[in-house]
Length: 62
Ligand code: FES
Image 1: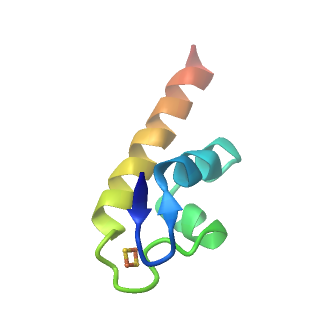
Image 2: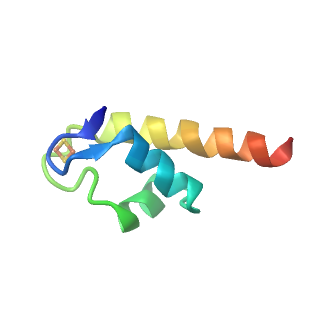
């Protein structure tokens, strides 16, 4: 599912960025153009990235 329609960035793309080491929305934006056009996706993308980061931390702690 696309989270950022302007740049065709999907939830999979965001999760992959976190899986590859991004630990914040800023880190993800260094790798993907999410949120850099109209900005409508930013709050949803931030929440999703935070969830992915928390999941990764939980998986690493287990
Ligand atoms: S929908 Fe992401 S910048 Fe427009």
